Image (cartoon, rainbow, N blue to C red; front, side, top):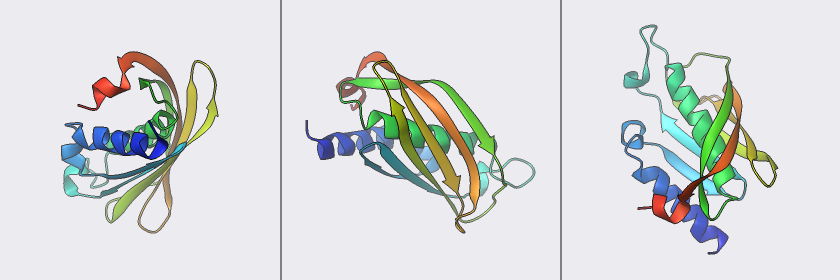
Length: 142
């Protein structure tokens, strides 16, 4: 499979995930990199009227994950650990995450991701470790 087909299949897999019906994200994947954007909506808020940290974590994890899976053609990856730092609240505009692989070896991928708001302020950052599961990637596409 060529790279562009692999990236497009990963993007389709992302869109087909039932959880993403709630967020309505836009994703773009390239070699070792991923960008995802969502529009901030009130349904993402906690009672303090800011985006809940779970939304920020999802963006960080997804951005880092798909950057890693862009380099793995055979198996579905899983997150084994993820460290998150949320540095600023947000309540309007959009959120955009940039994920990239910073290390790859035989058994794991290490990726980092940064979330920005509409004004390019850093909202959060994180890094994760991803490993191959037993699920074939082709079985996750459908």
